[in-house]
Length: 299
Length: 268
Ligand SMILES: Nc1ncnc2c1ncn2[C@@H]1O[C@H](COP(=O)(O)OP(=O)(O)O)[C@@H](O)[C@H]1O
Ligand SMILES: [Mg+2]
Image (cartoon, rainbow over all chains, first blue to last red; front, top):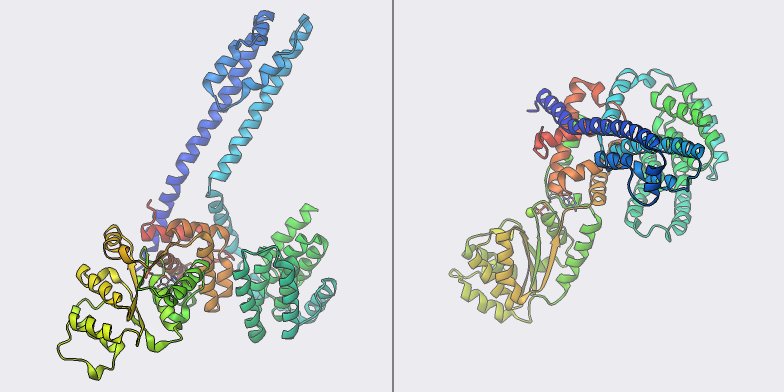
């Protein structure tokens, strides 16, 4: 028997366990970064006060007090590197001194800020937990609108019309006879063979699927083929097959999304947006809507 | 049966030739094994950790053998020496001619007498279960060149020894099956689902899912089966009880992690 509650609890514990060190380390990093900022600021102030001799000392290659302290505390923050080359500039008059010092302060701050964002970034790559957050978000969103589109009655004529216009635009002509699939397949293979030696076997599976599709005319299969082409980077084929899937089942959101994504990759964002709007006129789909919103915002 | 129940059943461990999946590595070894069988070798050793697909491969080879009359498979070891010898005899000659008191020595004589007249290949699965004395006899039988053996065994330290002691002197060919790569894992899952027409489910597996599956199972096919079975067990439960939890178009890594917890790949 599956004791799901127990498993869910265990999973939460597991998650927490995995998150803990990350939380601690990010707090530690933040504290360290803050400390570094504070120290370098007080440090450079002191160099200001100490005056010209101190600066000349650094110019000669002797470390100034400020750089010493900061490097001792947080070696990973490359603060002193910035200050050294600037201080090395020959300093002659008193006014110049002051300006140089402020300069160093600014660059120091920038450096610190930069290194901060850097650590945040590296955390993200190390950390697989964003997926978990996404899944949580998905959970919330899905539960509210998952089955919405089923309630909407498809308006067939309009959809057929719209998908045929798309077909005209796309280089692939209207098709459903097997021979044409085969022809375009062959053309495609000859083009791609030089590029993708590694995935010949995968191609064979696709080939099998395409053959199978010619027998079954299963829209889900067509959609799968479209997505496979998309994953391989063959966006024209992805468009073609999503149109095929769409003509068999206009309500399937996946085929529309694949169509749009492939169009975007082909540099035809406008067509993608148009298509998704057409879809949303007939059906409601959270996924399509959010993707459309993303596309529109990027313009 | 519910959808997820059916999906569970896809990933039950079983050796069915019609469900053989040509993965990059398995195709490679299939070809290699086929070639080896053609060569005038006495023995071929197929080894690898449990769950790397040895039985599947050996069954496929047996199934595909064009020359059915000359290729035989013993999938469950016959540990009794007399019985084993009898079995081999029936591969060579009609059962009706089987002598009452067929001993090992007598069988060797028969093999020698058949030399240049008959050549057969016998596939022995789970050969780690044969005693070392019987293994030694198998080796001597192969020396007559009437019977060629393809020996499939699990690789453990102990069996490494068997391999060395008995075979190294007169080997032959060794083929080691290994766990799958991330690519193999992906192909395995995709093909298994597509084979049963679960296109939408196949589409739900994203790169991050596959990576996680590979991390948990190390690409061992038996472990992949177990993980997938448990995953769909969880999905089946949610479908019946909290369907909103599994809505969406991708597999959630969370449920893979839950499966891994259940199977003890990780712990909380
Ligand atoms: N090439 C393959 N095609 C289909 N299934 C496979 C393949 N390789 C491994 N499997 C799956 O993995 C399981 C374990 O493989 P098996 O051959 O029994 O491993 P071994 O004999 O090495 O212990 C099988 O039950 C099968 O479901
Ligand atoms: Mg086995």
